[in-house]
Image (cartoon, rainbow, N blue to C red; front, side, top):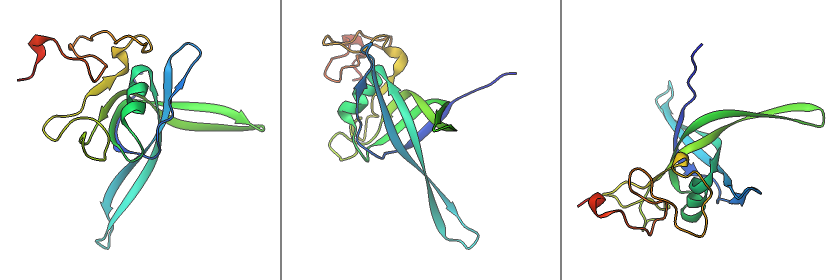
Length: 162
Protein backbone atom coordinates (compact mmCIF):
# COMPACT_ATOMS: atom_id res chain seq x y z
CA UNK A 1 0.00 0.00 0.00
CA UNK A 2 1.32 3.44 -0.93
CA UNK A 3 1.61 6.20 1.65
CA UNK A 4 2.37 9.89 1.62
CA UNK A 5 3.41 11.93 4.65
CA UNK A 6 3.65 15.67 3.93
CA UNK A 7 2.68 18.69 6.04
CA UNK A 8 2.72 22.38 5.14
CA UNK A 9 2.10 24.86 7.95
CA UNK A 10 1.91 28.65 7.91
CA UNK A 11 1.74 30.30 11.29
CA UNK A 12 3.60 32.16 14.01
CA UNK A 13 6.16 31.01 16.56
CA UNK A 14 4.74 30.72 20.07
CA UNK A 15 8.05 31.02 21.92
CA UNK A 16 11.66 32.03 21.42
CA UNK A 17 13.92 29.38 19.94
CA UNK A 18 16.30 27.43 22.16
CA UNK A 19 19.06 25.91 20.05
CA UNK A 20 20.76 22.75 21.33
CA UNK A 21 23.59 20.63 19.98
CA UNK A 22 23.81 16.85 20.10
CA UNK A 23 27.13 15.24 21.12
CA UNK A 24 27.73 14.67 17.40
CA UNK A 25 27.66 18.44 16.84
CA UNK A 26 24.30 18.43 15.03
CA UNK A 27 22.07 21.42 15.88
CA UNK A 28 18.46 20.77 16.88
CA UNK A 29 15.58 22.88 18.12
CA UNK A 30 11.93 22.38 19.01
CA UNK A 31 9.77 25.29 17.94
CA UNK A 32 6.16 25.88 18.79
CA UNK A 33 3.81 27.17 16.10
CA UNK A 34 0.32 28.59 16.28
CA UNK A 35 -1.74 27.94 13.15
CA UNK A 36 -5.13 29.61 12.91
CA UNK A 37 -8.24 28.73 10.93
CA UNK A 38 -11.14 31.13 10.51
CA UNK A 39 -14.63 29.84 9.83
CA UNK A 40 -18.16 31.14 9.83
CA UNK A 41 -20.65 29.61 12.25
CA UNK A 42 -24.27 28.82 11.38
CA UNK A 43 -25.29 32.08 13.04
CA UNK A 44 -23.02 33.99 10.65
CA UNK A 45 -20.31 35.09 13.06
CA UNK A 46 -16.62 34.44 12.41
CA UNK A 47 -14.76 32.15 14.81
CA UNK A 48 -11.00 31.67 14.85
CA UNK A 49 -9.63 28.27 15.91
CA UNK A 50 -5.95 28.03 16.76
CA UNK A 51 -3.97 24.80 16.67
CA UNK A 52 -0.62 24.57 18.43
CA UNK A 53 1.98 22.38 16.74
CA UNK A 54 5.47 21.34 17.84
CA UNK A 55 8.06 21.30 15.05
CA UNK A 56 11.60 19.88 15.20
CA UNK A 57 14.26 21.55 13.04
CA UNK A 58 17.70 20.06 12.44
CA UNK A 59 21.14 21.19 11.28
CA UNK A 60 21.68 24.52 9.60
CA UNK A 61 17.92 25.11 9.41
CA UNK A 62 17.76 25.04 13.23
CA UNK A 63 20.72 27.42 13.47
CA UNK A 64 19.21 29.90 11.03
CA UNK A 65 15.86 29.80 12.83
CA UNK A 66 17.61 30.46 16.14
CA UNK A 67 19.56 33.38 14.68
CA UNK A 68 16.76 35.18 12.84
CA UNK A 69 13.42 34.21 14.40
CA UNK A 70 11.76 34.93 17.72
CA UNK A 71 8.38 34.62 19.39
CA UNK A 72 5.64 35.88 17.03
CA UNK A 73 7.71 35.51 13.85
CA UNK A 74 5.69 34.34 10.83
CA UNK A 75 7.07 31.14 9.32
CA UNK A 76 6.19 28.51 6.74
CA UNK A 77 7.27 24.93 7.47
CA UNK A 78 7.17 21.93 5.19
CA UNK A 79 7.87 18.54 6.67
CA UNK A 80 6.44 15.23 7.77
CA UNK A 81 4.43 13.93 10.71
CA UNK A 82 6.14 11.75 13.30
CA UNK A 83 4.54 9.98 16.25
CA UNK A 84 6.68 9.88 19.39
CA UNK A 85 5.74 7.28 22.02
CA UNK A 86 7.12 6.80 25.53
CA UNK A 87 6.12 5.52 28.93
CA UNK A 88 5.85 7.61 32.10
CA UNK A 89 4.99 6.05 35.46
CA UNK A 90 3.63 2.94 33.73
CA UNK A 91 1.36 4.95 31.41
CA UNK A 92 1.91 4.93 27.69
CA UNK A 93 2.03 8.39 26.16
CA UNK A 94 2.29 9.64 22.61
CA UNK A 95 2.65 12.94 20.80
CA UNK A 96 2.29 13.82 17.14
CA UNK A 97 4.82 16.37 15.93
CA UNK A 98 6.22 17.71 12.66
CA UNK A 99 9.80 17.11 11.54
CA UNK A 100 10.59 20.27 9.57
CA UNK A 101 12.43 19.64 6.34
CA UNK A 102 12.06 23.10 4.76
CA UNK A 103 11.63 26.46 6.42
CA UNK A 104 10.60 29.76 4.85
CA UNK A 105 11.01 32.88 6.94
CA UNK A 106 8.25 35.38 6.24
CA UNK A 107 7.82 39.09 6.96
CA UNK A 108 10.18 41.98 6.40
CA UNK A 109 13.69 42.44 7.70
CA UNK A 110 12.87 45.86 9.12
CA UNK A 111 9.49 44.81 10.51
CA UNK A 112 8.96 43.00 13.77
CA UNK A 113 8.05 39.72 12.10
CA UNK A 114 11.49 38.16 11.89
CA UNK A 115 13.89 37.87 8.97
CA UNK A 116 13.18 36.71 5.53
CA UNK A 117 13.21 39.45 2.95
CA UNK A 118 11.41 42.63 2.06
CA UNK A 119 7.98 43.07 0.62
CA UNK A 120 9.22 42.76 -2.95
CA UNK A 121 11.43 39.75 -2.36
CA UNK A 122 10.43 36.51 -0.65
CA UNK A 123 12.48 35.19 2.24
CA UNK A 124 15.22 32.59 1.94
CA UNK A 125 14.09 28.98 2.11
CA UNK A 126 16.23 26.65 4.20
CA UNK A 127 16.17 22.97 3.35
CA UNK A 128 17.80 20.43 5.66
CA UNK A 129 18.99 18.41 2.64
CA UNK A 130 21.17 21.36 1.54
CA UNK A 131 23.51 20.82 4.46
CA UNK A 132 25.05 17.43 5.00
CA UNK A 133 27.04 18.40 8.09
CA UNK A 134 26.51 20.68 11.06
CA UNK A 135 27.71 24.23 10.47
CA UNK A 136 31.25 24.94 11.57
CA UNK A 137 33.23 28.14 11.96
CA UNK A 138 33.84 28.06 8.22
CA UNK A 139 31.28 29.20 5.68
CA UNK A 140 28.98 26.38 4.46
CA UNK A 141 29.47 24.99 1.00
CA UNK A 142 27.41 26.40 -1.84
CA UNK A 143 24.36 24.31 -2.77
CA UNK A 144 23.12 23.49 -6.26
CA UNK A 145 21.19 26.76 -6.56
CA UNK A 146 24.37 28.75 -5.95
CA UNK A 147 23.32 30.28 -2.63
CA UNK A 148 25.06 29.80 0.64
CA UNK A 149 23.50 29.13 4.03
CA UNK A 150 25.27 32.24 5.29
CA UNK A 151 23.11 35.36 4.89
CA UNK A 152 26.19 37.55 4.42
CA UNK A 153 27.72 35.53 1.58
CA UNK A 154 27.37 36.67 -2.01
CA UNK A 155 25.95 34.57 -4.90
CA UNK A 156 28.14 33.84 -7.93
CA UNK A 157 28.17 36.58 -10.61
CA UNK A 158 25.82 34.68 -12.97
CA UNK A 159 23.12 34.31 -10.26
CA UNK A 160 22.67 38.03 -9.54
CA UNK A 161 18.92 38.64 -9.95
CA UNK A 162 19.14 42.03 -11.71
